[in-house]
Image 1 (spheres, rainbow, N blue to C red):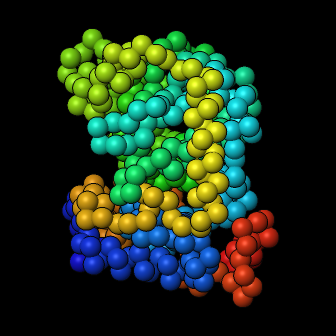
Image 2 (cartoon, rainbow, N blue to C red):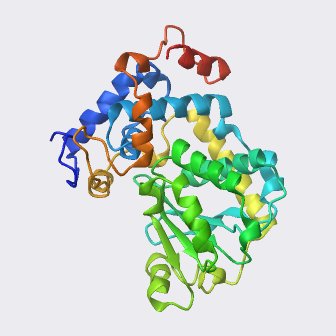
Length: 338
């Protein structure tokens, strides 16, 4: 199926077509694919393709930039002792329960003040994302965010933190969000939401659901997604046990051990080891978008903005004459090939 459709048509790729796109992205990345099997598995490449509307050059560019970021930032090497202080408030944490689909749940409480710098907040967010992704089961690649607006007001706003959070989540962890639930946001949040939306890709904000405890229709979202016995009472559930730092610290240290074992193994994440039929169907069925005559979404602001920085195939080839190692020198090597 050609990717060029009349505007208003829906793009849906079959499994063979998806695999062809995956192979093309790998070809564009070049020899470094063999050096980073965990980031270049079929499931991982599929996420970058979905995030860039199946445009192979832009997906390859995004993946390449993420490889460089991971080499320099080393997110998989962040450990609990590095960020424990940032976790004390319970502003962001991984829940000890899953939704009914087995997805990891991240809880966020934007109404809680955060005294730490933006850089430290982002480092802790990256740690939480790495830990949450590691918990995803084979064939399950997305998570749920529960955002509790208790105590939130206009003074809670930080445009810089919001912008950086959106950038990290969308650019470094594409297609990891299954659903974001905004629980009981105040009326004044509507104005802030208008301000925030330009920072988000259309695919991201379409996954947001507003839920209010006094609205039986929206509250049903929680009942359909969660075991109400395990769900925290702050989200309408029956579990009265809230965030406990000591217990959470113990869980995260166990997660650090699991992460260390994974890093040593060099294999793809459990959620990336296999591309199941369900994953492929989700890729095809969850990706309808309007296409202009050049095959690019006329409504996807991010893709449109990349138009001016499009790159040719030769620009994406990575020079791997020497063995690429996971350190800063490897990142420089990739950059020098651009």
